[in-house]
Amino acid sequence: MKVFVLAVDEGSLAAAGRKLGRSPAAVSRAIAFLEERVGAELLHRTTRSIKLSEEGERYVEVCRRVLTELEEAEDIATGARAAPRGLLTITAPVVSGEMVLRPILDAFLDTYRTRLDQIRRDHGHRAVAGLTKDRIEEKILKPLHNKPGAKIDTLKKLRILIRHAKDLKWLTADPSDGIKRGKSKEIRAWTDAELAAFEKRWPFGTKQRAAYELMLNVGTARVDTHLTTWIQADAEDFEYTRRKTGIPVLVEKADSLRQALAALPRKHV
Image 1 (cartoon, one colour):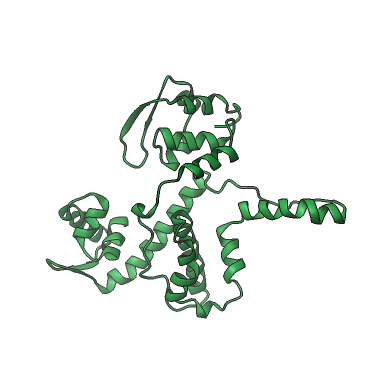
Image 2 (cartoon, rainbow, N blue to C red; image 1 turned 45 degrees about the vertical axis):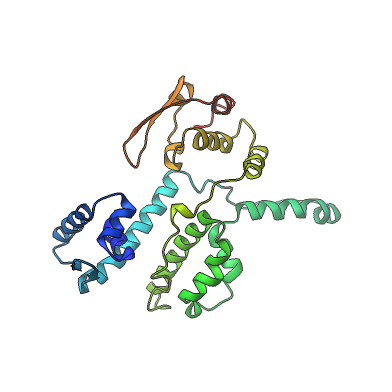
């Protein structure tokens, strides 16, 4: 499904192959296998272009929904949404509440406000019918141009809301169609100042610092970081198999990574 959707988004088998690191022939075989499985021709192919068949137009929308739900399921399974939840009740005198607690609570809410809450806060007063492709790109995604991770996540959440609006007949078409997710090359490296700020915010002994050191020194993906075990943490070198590619990796532990893992309370996994 992912190969099929990517081919449609990129407009050609060759472009999809470059994105996936596969040959056009491999992409074509994958789509042919999918067509055989569903029992219908999904793409009309020529030497230079591809075009969705009538069945393909219906099927690609189903694939987008399934892939989005799979990403959401992976986010939940890997704990990507681990954030405080529930009702927080605080009692304090009015003066100290306004002068002392209010700035702290505002910062707390800004830190843990979910993407859906941000969309609701910034755009919830607008009619769903006015949600156009231009508005999504210019008013919602463009302000996040320097935050590619947030931009990708916002688009994912928007598509969930749009799918719900279509189910309720509030929308007849998906205004996010044609909007591509950000590419990895758009994600810039952190500056030294940003690295220092993160290290100051999350000292040794926190899960966030351990995850940071793993990604920085070993190159683990998010899902591999969440699956790290105490056996790996206690070993002399760090050894793991990348979940998405199946490639085994063995890396010597940097001193900062050793310190981060050793400082973790054993209640953390």
